[in-house]
Image (cartoon, rainbow, N blue to C red; front, side, top):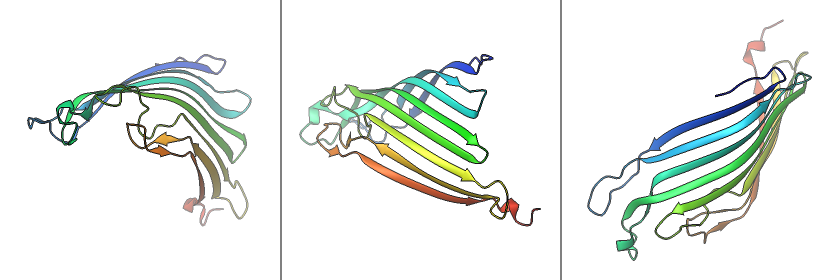
Length: 194
């Protein structure tokens, strides 16, 4: 649901539901129910009139239910699981794209997460697996608009992911890291063009 005001501001709200199969069987041999999720998101988009661009600020709340967790009757062997788990991720995201001059695009995003295991037989209150406290990215893209290089695009970017945990017990710490990306593209439709 979105409403676009004439001044370029567009507040919005969305709700979505999803499911995914849960692999395995319970101690009694029965199949697990699907893991379900509900997500709410609210935010505001701004499209400035002076330049080509868009900025979005949003807040979201995602909750998964029927998450598999260790069966308390078989904790020693960890061979069985039960579906009593629940996890929650809340966050705020700021993202934007601007094209200050023809052919040049600057795209950036930053997201802050608050993840928590809200129901579990052994890890309640811990952070979720591979969910950082925050992450950010920046991407520059330039497409040549005329001359012999028309149709060629060059791009480069960087991403930062804050430290995470590799297990629900939060004992396997994974350090923060940076990723660097680059791209070269060519529009083959420019071959033989005038």
